[in-house]
Amino acid sequence: MKKRGFEIARGYEDKEIELPVRKTKYASGYDVAAAEDVTIPVFEPGIKPTLIPTGLKAYCEPDEFYMLVNRSSGPKKGLLMANGIGIIDHDYYENEGNDGHFFFQYFNCSDHEITIHKGDIIGQVIFQKYLIVDNDEPEDAVRKGGFGSTDK
Image (cartoon, rainbow, N blue to C red; front, side):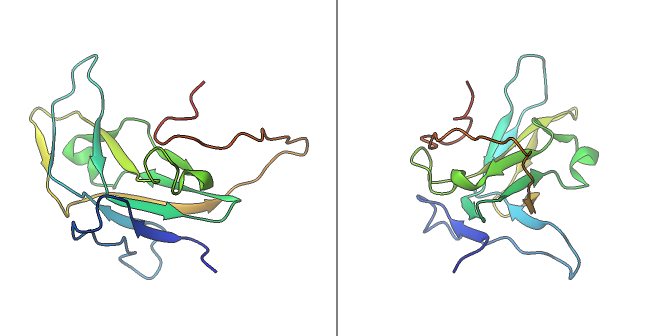
């Protein structure tokens, strides 16, 4: 039985995407690489974050989620995650909107464009359990979309 892990997202099967790995025995995060070249423009007010495709989807247990986090070297290079961290729920996996393909979203706070190349490490994924409160009564809604689909 599968508990948690990574798979190649639909549309990226023939793009030579490597599954994330932990680089050391005690690392908590799995290093994730860019699936294609992306240029991130210098930040200016009103600009939208640049989405960097990973070509990956991840699965986890129903009481788990995974976080997308910046690398420690990201801010030194001027790369800031637009949402600080990304939280991705169990039901994002294989959703009908985008198959569960997750992206990193960055702003570039340097003074020059930054080009991310296919295969460059762009962030990390950390799997985590979560807790619920005593009177938790979740909605029975089923996710119907992908990125940002739970906005109301």
